[in-house]
Image (cartoon, rainbow, N blue to C red; front, side, top):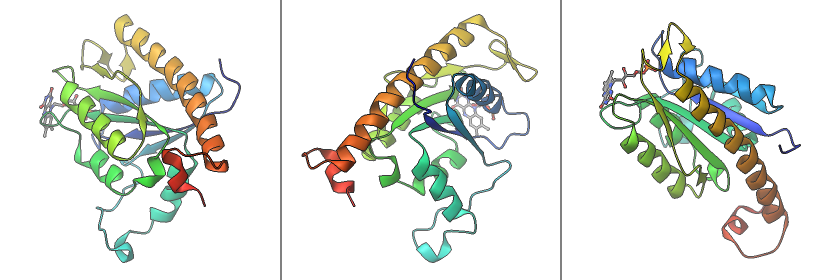
Amino acid sequence: MPNASLKVLTVVGSLNKNSITRTVMNHVASQLTAQGCDVDVLDFAHEPLSLFNPDSAHRGAGYSSLKERVDRADVYLLGTPDYHGSVSGVLKNFLDHFWHEFAGKLFATIVASHEKGLTVTDQLRTVARQCYAWSIPYGVSFVDRDDVREGDVVSDALKRRLEMLVRDVHVYGDLLARQRQVDLAGTDVGFLARLRK
Ligand SMILES: Cc1cc2nc3c(=O)[nH]c(=O)nc-3n(C[C@H](O)[C@H](O)[C@H](O)COP(=O)(O)O)c2cc1C
């Protein structure tokens, strides 16, 4: 396992009071914490985010502290229910607020879906590509009752897949974070050159 304390921002993309997305994100957050990662949980049910307005005068009260948290993160672990084969509005709204903050960092995705969530996963990979972010080369999806019941992850299959995701987020997130620092500090050509101060 890597040594560095990787900074992971987990984003809960459901406002549902009894959200199964939240259950799984909390499960993953506690596993990452147990491995020494520095995990920051962003849950819009507790911290509402205003609707994105490109006019910076309308960014909303919490925007600057949220931007600091987004800037600080090495990895974005995005959880969303499948809504019409797409991401939830709350998650899309979060993504709309940022773009170059994501560049050179890692996206990992978890989708609550009755249909494997493939289109949702693909859409999040498109967002990552559009923002010059990396993405884990697979998604994790799950369903209520079979995988999650009464606030707990119950299926062994989902537990194993989440264990794999946690391992990969830690290992690849750390590799990419180190290389990102090298590229930002260096003079070499490469896509991160544009972000040098
Ligand atoms: C507006 C809306 C659209 C939905 N569309 C889909 C869908 O296209 N495919 C699917 O599998 N589930 C769909 N669902 C079901 C949710 O993905 C499912 O209930 C999920 O478990 C909710 O996650 P949550 O408990 O974290 O909010 C939809 C639910 C809503 C409210």
